[in-house]
Amino acid sequence: MDFEENEKPVAVSPAVVKRLPRYYRYLRELIAQGRTRISSGELSALMNVTASQIRQDLNCFGGFGQQGYGYNVSYLFAKISEILGVGAGFHAIIIGAGDLGRALVHLSMFEKRGVDIVAMFDTGEGMVGKQFAGVDVLPLEELETFCTGQKVDIGVITCPKEQVRPIAERLVRIGIGGLWNYMGVELKYDPREIAVENVHLGDSLMILNYKIASRKHARQEELSPDGDPDTNPLDENDPDA
Amino acid sequence: MDFEENEKPVAVSPAVVKRLPRYYRYLRELIAQGRTRISSGELSALMNVTASQIRQDLNCFGGFGQQGYGYNVSYLFAKISEILGVGAGFHAIIIGAGDLGRALVHLSMFEKRGVDIVAMFDTGEGMVGKQFAGVDVLPLEELETFCTGQKVDIGVITCPKEQVRPIAERLVRIGIGGLWNYMGVELKYDPREIAVENVHLGDSLMILNYKIASRKHARQEELSPDGDPDTNPLDENDPDA
DNA sequence: TAGATTGTTAATCGATTAACAATC
DNA sequence: TAGATTGTTAATCGATTAACAATC
Image (tube, rainbow over all chains, first blue to last red; front, side):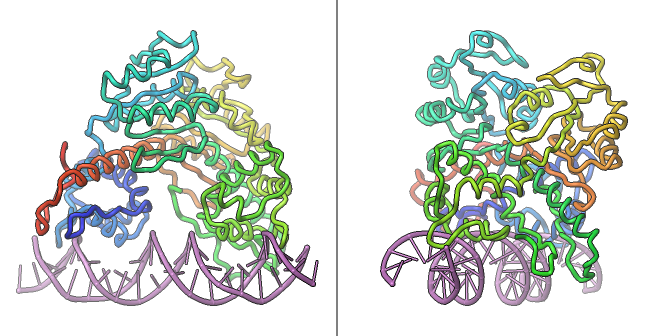
């Protein structure tokens, strides 16, 4: 339970939160396969994490299992879905109808997770008035009018870098629930005021670069004799990272 | 240096590696501003991390600073760039010329980080032969021919989910350096065989969802003065479900 | 009941922060 | 030199894993 006896909410550690979507994916897959029941041991083998971690993680939110039985797959999936706000009926708008914004609106990601894209916004003459995946592109000036006329929870930021901060500011003023920021511009808001999730694609590319470059170095080391058998061989099994 | 005296490579912790791209961005910005010198203390204030962590992180790779002076910004930037493989002249191909692939090829991300996109691949009649951002879309059958005829380091995977595993397999066989996987399909390879970096956009959206949803619950807690202290409701974070 | 497996506490491990001696 | 600030070791904190009693 994430409430102590005095009913004060206890923050779930970020490490745990980061793992939740992965549980969600695996459980969805298990349901698709018709599994009705699974133990932490079986799930651990499947996901390459310890059974202990699975039980510990799930117990941050409540006792979802049953001793001697394991977990009921659909019940557990329902619980995790609920925790992750799937089915909360969140509405999103996309700011920027450029390549990235248009790619996002076409992906099934949002609807698969119960998030409804209700509008896109752009300044460019070329884009305003068009439709992508059935979503209208509205002029940026109408942002406030639109958002007061209808519930909007998430602002997806894909506009040019220079506009990121002013637009974030406008969305905060509107009282939107969260920002999904793709532009690599760092936004500093009090998390109690607005939730921010940054997608740093460039950072991810750099990390891949690093892995490739460092593997090359390691290889070159391998070739030179010195090879000492009792080294631990870069043992990184983290499939997700 | 990440080599000990005996020249054995010591694995840098994933926590440190994840932070490197952020240092890279801040240093690039400092250079743009004309800064020539910075101390760990100043950088820590700027980046909102401890000075201790900055010094600790940088020292995994070598002594880049100077006591009593701090760090030379361009030197440090050059070092981090090198560690991250910027300027290593990596070549990338994009598998899948759908919305996502086309969005990626248009972003300046790759060239800004010294990675060259040398081709896109697709099966669809509609796409093969077209050009996006000056990059040709080739038929998927030519994957092997193309990659043996020219150095390719990175495969960006944006093709349909069902094709992800077979295509990854082909790229591994070709001996490509790393995969940048956007499709949320988990790939399990020995990191010594191929580097894999997964971009789970759906997971990121879920985490944002979680933050928004849990903030709402916290708010509601604030409002209700004090719940019944000794109830153990399995589900108090279930106002809407 | 006996076997299985959770929920949970305790032990271990890793990562972050603090402190300070080295040194520019 | 004196002041500043690194590089590095030691202390703290948090997260993961192991162990086991509770219990289905």
